[in-house]
Amino acid sequence: MPLPRSVEPQLAKLVEKAPTGPQWVHEIKFDDYRLGARIERGKVQLLTRCGLDWMAEYPATAAAFARLAVKRGYIDGELCGVRADGVTSFELMQQSSDAGYGGLIHFAFDLLEFDGEDVVKLPLLERKERLARLLKDPPEGIVYSEHEGGDGEAFRRAACQHGLEGVVSKRVDRPYLPGDRGVLVKSKCEPRRVRRCRLVRS
Image (cartoon, rainbow, N blue to C red; front, side, top):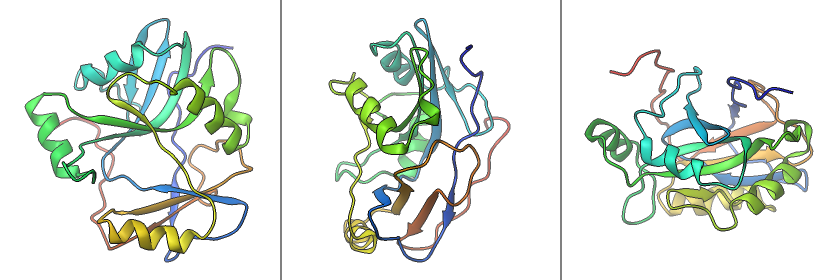
């Protein structure tokens, strides 16, 4: 089966409170660029939500993915600018993009394809287990996004206390469903501006 040219990302529905229960896990919500890494025989594309390839804008990130021990893969995640205190910053991300320098981190949180295996149909936790193994010792610039179970609201409050944007809660038993709103839900610490998909770089 050929590797998809691009995959519509799985999106999150906004809710006021994070859910709780064994069917959910929770991750930090980032405030930067959603980019899927498409890897095929050493060639890397960094695909936006619109399907545009931003590899030329972020060559250091593309080079990091090219060093992974995978011949063919598709990894979902977010490319972030990270402040000295560890908090992601969209403004820092924009500055990095405009200046054309590196120092950014791609937080990888899902695996859709791995060397011909149809991972996308597996439950979330099985996909994340494979991703964690792939990123056990990742190249500089790529970080595996950890998750937590338990009380989602307690996790959200802790994230807010650390100055983060919020959390994304995910159903542990569901496959990757592009564009679906409900398998993932996001709960924020405070209202943020809406950033729409850009068809061209400004």
